[in-house]
Length: 114
Length: 114
Picture 1: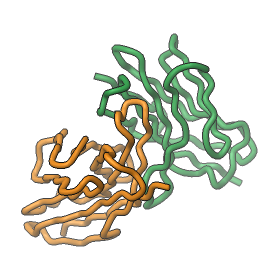
Picture 2: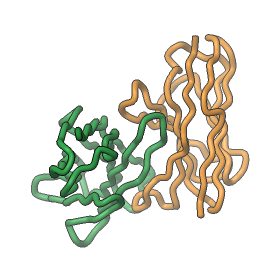
Picture 3: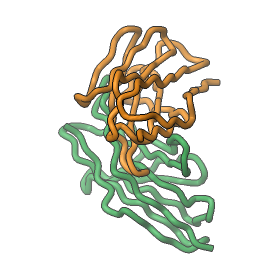
């Protein structure tokens, strides 16, 4: 079965600095990887996904993520953090085009300080 | 464009009472539908998913049940709530097949069982 791990419960960065939220995955085949963001008392919002092709994926709100097969990672990045980026971030994985099982990580709380 | 609705937004119910949460999707047809529970603002637990009318897959044995009476309607129910049923319930949809498609989440229902 597939799974993802988000090794950091909390990430703190200063506004204007680059941010990284880490995600590693474990699957027995080729993964489809996703990032979602959740603001307080709201549902999750899709940010970006990696299916195939270019390892660097660009998404909403200036976020990007790099798929690294050798390190089994899919870290979320942004060159310059905003206070409004403060939220809970989830990495998720599915296995295969016809797979209905999406597994979410435990989430990482990002706090961007002014 | 597609829209997903959930209601109610907030619910306080006594232990042993019944539950009915409703989710509807607009602007798409034959979606995959999902119910998740999120405890303490953290990880997501997949409860049920449905690939079509009357087709329900349960991920976790519990006192909850789900039904899909119409293509774009997904209902989460319980005959007798437990204290442990408290949490934030999220409905989501995705295009089929889900493996390569992101999920879109509703605004959630905050359930408190007293």
